[in-house]
Structures are given as structure tokens and as C-alpha cells.
Length: 438
Image (tube, rainbow, N blue to C red; front, side, top):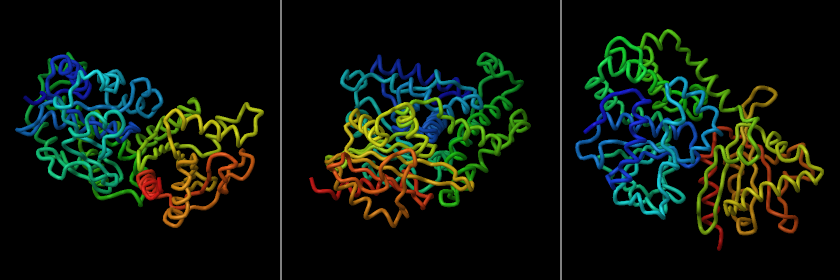
């Protein structure tokens, strides 16, 4: 039976309770999981997919309720101030989200793989502990990253969509647009039930329009952030523009939301919140938007940071009398050691004094990853338009390759091709890792 139409808040609460019940009674469940960086796009694409699919599931669905999973511990939500900024517009809060804390540990065997089906959004390979246990249960994907080739070609009745796009959420909107319309037209709760949920509205039509507007604003947040409000020409695709147009129609159909809607103001609010990381520690800044991969017995980690490298360096060296470069390299080494990384990269973004968007790239590699890092430096330099770079606060010359006798391999570049994000840089690094001799 499909989930009866209700607010996003009510849906998430219902999904969380249903997950607990399913685990306790060994019922079938379908989980919609974003990637392990758990960024805004993973949040919104997983929730949007689960909500719409639950309204109008396929006749032969594995389970009628789709449960969105935010791929992080609940405590890490606080590292993402943009989430809290968005929640106000969607009438939800962090307590409504299903996180890794809501799943039993895989070794406890309370959630058997055969009782689950997994839909991946914003990635197409289930990584880490979840991947070790449940990767064989992936039955659908909507993603905009390079195809890893592990999701089955035939995923019917779920979609298999992997294509270039500014935001994965745009692809979810396009893929499930007809289901959203069917779910909107088919059913809505009575106004009395809506009042019970805290939705102070006068009739069923206005109730569903407000729910649609809240869902649309949630989806728009990640699309606008990932495409810089549709101004990032190297990222924006037709699916992004179409999704924004469709979602804004949803907002404007709700009189109460249309009267206050200002897309630029909304984008600026979410973007400012995302960049407000001054209060985070050095490690939390690196953890906030982090992804990890295994390739050819090597492990790669990449952190995306919305501040320049000197901001990150300052977090480490501001109160130390130790050699500054040594202190920074040691701090990065500690971060790598906890995660057993062979290679670690920081991709930073910021605005130049002239107001132009810019990217910096820092890579540090242990001896096992030295050959791969050197290969990347040679082969990716032209494609990414890498230029040797340095950070003023660091002593020494980190813009030059450091021999192993002087500690880990490390290098800093200015990445002049600013259109290439982690989606493009990670495959280049992994390719170099795959080519490295063991």
C-alpha cells in the first residue's frame, strides 16, 4: 500500500518509525541512500526520491515504503549549517532524519541483506561498511558521477540513471516527475488531519500545494547550490534548468509561499550557511564534505572545503611554535592515519580578490601512494590546468614535490580549470592509483 499523502515532516517521522518496526520484525525495507559525504545534494535527492516513490510505488515494488537514509551519524548533522537553514523552509528538523544511527551494526545481523533493497542517489557504488554488507542488494540508481559499472544494467522496476548533470536532485525530479503529479492528484489527507499535523490550512487543495512547495524548496536548495543559482555554465545541464522551472511552478501554486518566494535570496541564504564553517575545528572541516575510495590496495580520501587553503592551514598553525609546514603535514598525517589513507586531497574553493571563483588542490601521500600521486601530477596537470602554488603561512616550498626523505609526498596547485570538481578529480586520482604497481 502506498504512503497516504502527507507533509514531508509526517513522511519522515513515519519512515523512521517504520524502519524500527521492519528491523524488529524482519520485514522487507527499501532504503534510498545518498553518498558518504552526505552533502546537500545527497540529502535532498534521497528524501525527494523516497517521498515521491512512496506516494506511487511500482506494482511489483520490493516494499511499498521507501526510506531515505542520510549516510552519516546523527551527530555530524551539526557540521552542516546549510541543513538547518534549509529545514526551516521545508518545515522539518534534524530529529526527523534517518541516519546511520538508526541502522543496526552490520555485524549484529539484525538487518539481513535479503530483507533489504537499496536505491543509490548521488553515487553509484555503495562504499564502506554498508557496501561490504549490502552492495549485492542495490536495485536502482539516480546519479551524476562517473559510472562505476557495478549497478546491474536491468534494475526494473527502479530506474538506472547515470548521466552528467549539475545536481543529482535535478535527475530525480526528471525521473519521478510523473509519479509526483500522480501522487499529488490521487490523494490528500483531510484538513482536519492536516491541522493535527500542524498545517494550518483551510482545504485539501491548499494543503497539498503547501506540502508541494515545501518539497520543492528542499529540492531547489541543492540544485541552486550545485549550479551557483544556474550561473555555473560548465555544470548546468538542461535537466537542471527544467527542474528549477518545474519546482518554482510548484512554489508559485501555493499562494502563501509564492508571496514570499525570492530565488536569489533563498540561494544566498543557503550558500551563506554552507560557507559558515569558522566555528568548526580543523578535523571537522575536513570531515564535513569527505569521500573515500579503495583502488588497487590503496585508499584515497578527498575533502571538499568552501574556504581557501590558508584558512585551513590557519586552523592548525595559529597557536603553535613548531615549524609551520611540519605542523600542517603532521595534522594531515594524523587525519590520514585514522582512516588508513594512502593518499589524501583537499579541494578548496573561494573567491579571489577580483571576485572570481577559484580552486586550490593539496595532495599528501604516504610511501605506498607516492607513485600514484606522482602519476596524477604528471597526467592530470594539463586536463585540470594545474599550476604550482604555495600558501603564504606555510614555511618551505610546498608548491614543489617533496622527496620521501623529507616526509610524505605533498604538493599544492592552483587549479585553473575551475569547472572540474571532485566528480572529475577523484576518477583521475583513482585511475593513477589503478595504474600504480603494487
